[in-house]
Length: 67
Figure (cartoon, rainbow, N blue to C red):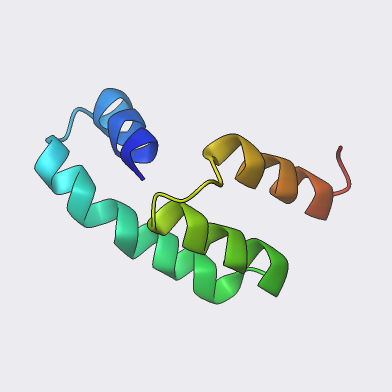
């Protein structure tokens, strides 16, 4: 989640504190609406697990027919 917080701060200019509040809300929103395999990968992002944003992007690409 730290990587996503840093990216959000960099791209939007909001404070790190605000980004830390926003990221879980957005990830939970996506988790509720994505297919189960991708939703479970979001759990790893939320928990700062082993799954990174690159892995999640690859999963989304696979879902959309890209490898």
